Image 1 (cartoon, rainbow, N blue to C red):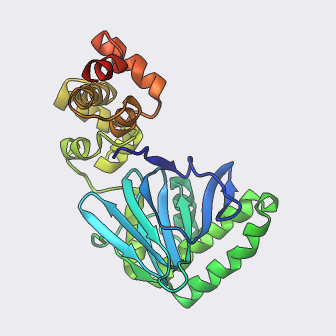
Image 2 (cartoon, rainbow, N blue to C red):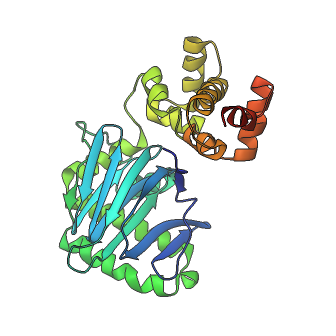
Length: 290
């Protein structure tokens, strides 16, 4: 990925012409977007995501999975994954209209307590699937639209209640969706080495990696240290720096592109860390290859 991967919802910015947001505790949690221009890119999910498409198509790819969410459909994606997307409008009028709902773990906990699901575990694994938007959910989405006309006047507690309402509605819409919601709280145990190999070039945190492996942060760190004889943060930094050095020497990518491609999020920090590790700045390799 040469372009910077946008971390969402943290990196979302409002465009009064096409996008608007409702916020909870200062962070965008519901995005409403209407576009007539095809767009593609990549984003890293900091929170769980429910995507509801009203018009147009939204194509998603992560790992070996690919989905196209069409009008009147929705999908639930768990946090801590890098997603490549392509979104394009309806063939007739080029209009693309969708809403994104970002769900934090504490909101899921509130929902499970309210719905008396705290002790419930998914009876079977429910894979990611696209499901139709029910009439109840359509009315729910319509009920949100007036809020986007004056988002600064909408209280955070009301936004939280609307997100809880969403969870009740999607759980009622499809039994597999309820299983997927239950699975969000804790991933099944996964090989740490597999998680690392799949995600080390993404802008992941140690907490994210622990979640993806199905372990607590302390258990993840302890098992990682035993396996690699190194803390995960040190292993990540070293792996990324070695890959960055290789890309700078063997490709025409700029220092900025290499920085973001290898999971770093700040060019100045990347350059400083690179120089500390190798004794020379990344720009010197690029200059030598010109």
